[in-house]
Length: 443
Image (cartoon, rainbow, N blue to C red):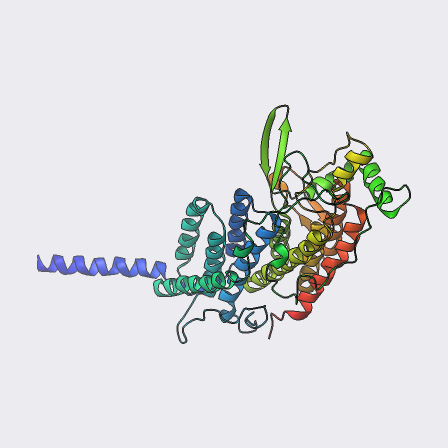
């Protein structure tokens, strides 16, 4: 009996040892550093942003703080990289790991990205299954329990640091304000079919990450409203009117590909329903995922790409919105219906904010500069971001070419005048180049 008990104990110990050996993985750090963990986490946050229907500038805020959290949580594990502490406005402190302890920094980084994304979005139920499966994947890799728990805790600490930092960017203080529509000819008014209030009229008050002020790259004033035949303003009105009436199929495809309308109202007879889509910033974050995969970027390079792209988009929106609510220019649809053709319709639904400058032009060119600085110019890529919305892949020879196409799409779509695009392109370039010149990710 005693011998049988001893044999049973020895057998149990052997089984436990085998199980323990299976759990232990000497390569867990390398396997946990698979950037696909971060990419699919970014995609999950995007799905939540789409569900919650955030305005494009607000979406950019979610992306940039989540990306900053991911980057800062990864930095201690990559000695060649430097923290953003002291480089971003008001960013003076972030949680640090305990000296002498082992961490899985990619795990902490992915955790930090997700936690900030969760905190800044509403639909928490969207994360439940994803989060459960994500952490289970890390455990399956064989991350030791103590390293796993320590890394999760560190990711949470970094996320808390970034949430605290985000709380001082004036976002809360700008909630609840509404734009007052004037009756002055040539100024913005709500547009059909939903006649939404103006979106984020106080976004210029949000703290930039790198810009000295929201107006640092303020563009020249737009053409004055003047419907006298032959005036610069009249000419651009007629250009967009005739362009939309004579669109080629390729121009229509371009307009639809870069629509990026988070909340499109569809009207059929007396029925009205909404279609949710990717935001402009979300489209460029999607491009960042694709190009980092194409370039075989490692975990830290992917986190760096998300950071620089999201920073460019975020500061780009602040710069653009500063001008939008200064010039308060009317949209083409309003002018054309009142002065040229009451039955004319744009291809795309007119967004609910002033016309000048073009947000797509500004943020796309800013993002293109960030991506070019990382991956190089003339990098060909295929953009499959819009496949979930029934649109085919489009191919580009460079990020700058993609940005220019995003810009001209707004003319083809009938929602922006030429001047807003051309000036917006330059404005976005200036923002992107400023960020690339000021932010140092490497030591």
